[in-house]
Length: 67
Image (cartoon, rainbow, N blue to C red; front, side, top):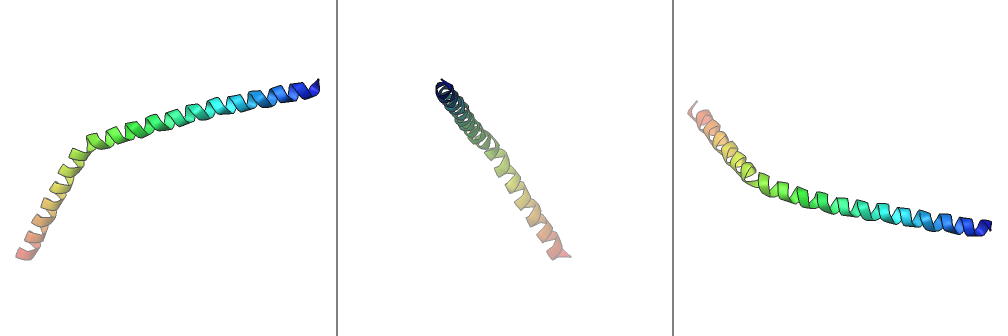
């Protein structure tokens, strides 16, 4: 009788771990999709900031060369 109880406990533990693992994998997939979407949304802003930084660096270099 005790063996049956231990087998049932083991089966339930495996089921619970499987459900938790499935949920974690789903959450990781959703997080990955969200991060890719955020990256697409931020890309134009990043490009604009890089262009601005390049212009500022060129202006500073030009001012340094004039001094």
